[in-house]
Amino acid sequence: MRNEEEKLEQLFAKFDSDWDVVELPKNHENRFMDKLSNKAIKNRKRNLYTTISIAATVLVMFSLSFFFKPEAKTNKLTFASKETKQTDSIFNVLIKNELNKLKEKESPQNQKIIADALQQMKVLDNDYQKIIKEIARNGENKQIIYAMISNLQTRISFLQNVLNQIETTEQLNIRNDEKTL
Image 1 (cartoon, rainbow, N blue to C red):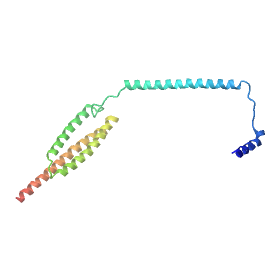
Image 2 (cartoon, rainbow, N blue to C red; image 1 turned 120 degrees about the vertical axis):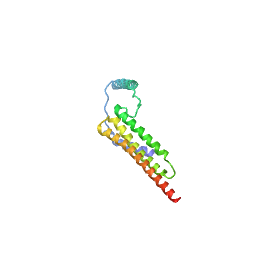
Image 3 (tube, helix red, strand yellow; image 1 turned 90 degrees about the horizontal axis):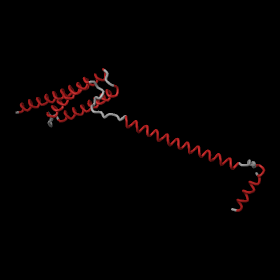
């Protein structure tokens, strides 16, 4: 270890003439301390301003959120006209009636047809929900209203077709049963 220290001293001894040694002016330490204290005061002021700015921003955001609460949506078609709401409610009543008829027809023979029909109704209902969101987002226009009515009509006619198919199947089963007797 002592050997290493001697090597370091020899190395630095070679560069003794190359060192930049400048005499510092008088009162250098006092000026340095003044600058340091001024910088600390500026930093404290800056931190105080930053803290006040953040607090003011939070206060403004809180007051805005307090005064401008969004209204709760009471109806699916909040932006729809009275006529559109009436059309929607009339078609939905018809659809519910057709679904009730379909559920009344449920039996082991037509259980698969009804399950498939209900699955298709879910797809149509999802499409309908997208249309309702579009009305809420962009308001009413002819294309969206036409799509809404078309979806409702498709749902009703689909349910009627399924009911007709079930009735046809039941009649065929009755005829086959009569023939076998």
